[in-house]
Every structure is written in C-alpha cells, then in structure tokens.
Length: 387
Image 1 (cartoon, helix red, strand yellow):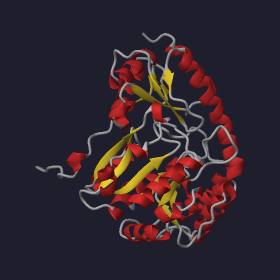
Image 2: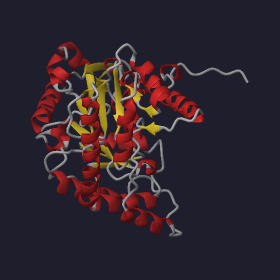
Image 3: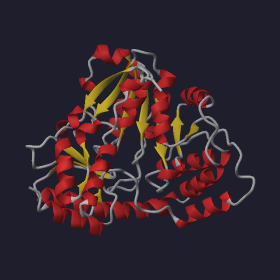
C-alpha cells in the first residue's frame, strides 16, 4: 500500500533508545555481558503493601469498568501526601488531576494552552517529552541552556524581554532529567515573580522530588508563595514508588488550568484501571516508609558512581539528588553518540548520549542509577579498561 507520513509526524525523529538497544543486543550476541544504565526504569519492585492492594483489587469482579478519570480516593490521597510532605493544601476535587503517567500529561499540556507560533520556554538539555508536546501543539521552543556557571538552573534573567512577552508556558524539571540540579525555595520564588511579570503559565515536573540525599523533605514548586496563581506541578508514581509500568501520575495546582486539561482529557481517554488507582492510594499513604528506603538505596549508588567516575577523570555535574548522573567523559575525541556506541562495544555498558536531550548535552552522557551497588562497582572496573 502506498502511504505517506503526515507533515506533523515528520517533526518527530526516531529516538536513539531503540538504536542503543540494538547495539547492546549485538554486543550481547558476541558474548558481552551488558550493564544497562540507560533507561530510568526503577529496578526496585513496588512495596509489598502496594502489590497486595493491586492484587486484591484486581480480583474483585466489579473492578473492570471505565473510571473516566481519577477516583475520589486517589485525589484525596494526593492531597494528603502534599499536606504531609510539603505542607501544601490542595482541594482534591479541583486542584488534583490524574494523568496516565506523567508523559501523557506533559505531551498533551501544550495543546491546552498554546496556539501555533506561541513560545514555550524549556531547557536544553531537557526531557524529550517536552519537545514532543511543543511540536504537537505547533508552538515554538525557546531553549534555556543549563550550564555549570548557573548551577544547571535556567537563567530567567537571560531570557530576552521580547521572548518572554511572547511566551505562554515555562517548563521546569528540578531535580532534572538528564541534569539532576536541585531547586530551592528562593529560585521558585523567582520563577513565580517572572511568571507574574510576563503572564506565563508554569509547569514544574517533579518526577524526581523524592530523590534527594540531603535535608529532610522533598521540594515542591507549590511551596513558593503565589505558585498556584501561575501554574501547576506534575508528578508520577513511576520513579518514587516503582510503578513505571502502571502508568499513573497527577497534575496539581491552579484549579482553572486543571479544568482546561480536564476538558481535554475527557476527549482523549477513559481513565486508569481502578486497581492501579487503589494501589497508588496505598503508595501515597505510606510514602514516608517507602521513599526512605528508596533514598537510602539511591544515595549509596549515587555516591559510589559519582566518586568512582570522578576518580577515573570524568567531569560529573554536582548533584545531591535525582536518579541520574550527568557527566562529561574523558575521551573527548568521540562525540557523545559515537562514545555511547564505543562504550557498548568495549565494556558492555549502556548509557544515553547527552545530545539526545538537546544540543547543549553534546559531549556528555546520562547515566541511570538503576542497578545494584555491586553492578555499579563492576561498571567502574570495566571503565578502567576503556581506551
């Protein structure tokens, strides 16, 4: 049959992840033992309480109808979680919106607020879903570079006023992917002031908010005074609660903005399987117990790999959280894509080239902390042989 891709689809290049997987499989077929540090898919299983809730609810005969969105119990659990963890009060009925994983919400959100030609302020490097959503809405991306000089935080003062005046949306991700820069209340206060000055909607992607290794609480954009006036925060249960395959997340914040998204979603989906929502309620209500263990595990991994790479001559971006390391490798005669394939061939270690997340990621790689400590130690030993 003779057919063509739509003009819109021509804006979506093939992602590199599949090619990396194919290269890894070729190395495996030649006898190489792989260490996959590419995808940010948690290797830890969900807590037994969460799995038990899912199993019990799935056995009920009346669990299989359409939910048409988040059930009340889920919305209320999110509100309780925010009150306990960051002392932010949410109205479960109007200030919480469930999404089918955070990526679904991230990709669809620009459709709700951006007209063709509008500017979206996003980071470079940045998570690939942001770019996809901007292209889907036919908006224009303005890239805020993440640099060591500015502690890998977007420099709002560097945005030209004529760009800010055309912008409708600002996307932040702290701690981030691929760069795990940490937020502060002072920085979020600056974001609120910037958004109010230029009438810009803010979306903070808090997918890694529970991955902090210093202090005693995660940081929420909604903790900043006036944050609800200008924007929203999204988070998923994929990372913090090891429910990546379950695809359940939420947006919280400005009720009027969420109502627009609620209307969009009513035309796109019929909600998430209720047993998954019940399991999510259990996870959120036991967050302290579950995420304390998560942080202890990832802090050890983070320290081991960061110190080990530094000793091997890698330039690792400073971080005190997140589930990735972002680093400049020592063999700079390779561009980052070539280096990723060279790494697979020589060591069997799979990482993601930084340029997959934007041009400013060139000559860097993203490394996911998704293997046990012993495997990460073996990875460091293999890297000692890299030439």
